[in-house]
Structures are given as C-alpha cells and as structure tokens.
Length: 108
Image (cartoon, rainbow, N blue to C red; front, side, top):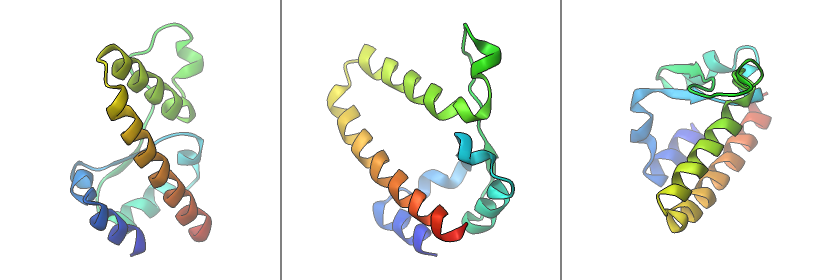
C-alpha cells in the first residue's frame, strides 16, 4: 500500500505498533475504523477527549478530540519551552495530514 510505504520511508511505521487512534469528525465515518484496521493490520479505535474540565458534555465528543488534543499539546509545549520542536512537529504533522486527506479522498 502506498501509505504504508510512505510511513516506512518516513521512519514512523514502527510508531503504529501499539495501534492507531482516529480523531476528529472524519473518524466517525461509518466503516473507517474497520477499513484502517484492514489496511494497517493493527488495532484501530476512535479517540475521544479525556481529562477535560469545563464544558465536558460538549467537548467530550469524539469529533472534538483533535482540537482538544492539539490544545493540550500546545499548552504543554509552551509550558516546557519546546517552541522549536513544536515548529518541526507541526510541519511534519501538517504534511502527514495532507497525505492522509488525499488518501481518504481517493479511497472514499
């Protein structure tokens, strides 16, 4: 598969050994988790935000998991002074998301 080969080339395929967590609104597409499980031959689940306070009923839905996760990541990075690392990770994640988006458009 093209995506598996790209992950292997980027040196990140081994990070999938523990499984894949799909997040955001698109993760709720019927059959997406099962499809990803067949493609990657690993455990796949839909993520939901954990350990949040405030508007918990509102923000604990799976379609908010990406935004909540990015907010937590940004807060932790800022508090730990990891701005330079954050720039590299953001660029890498953005590139990976574009490729995933392209793959999803082709497959569905």
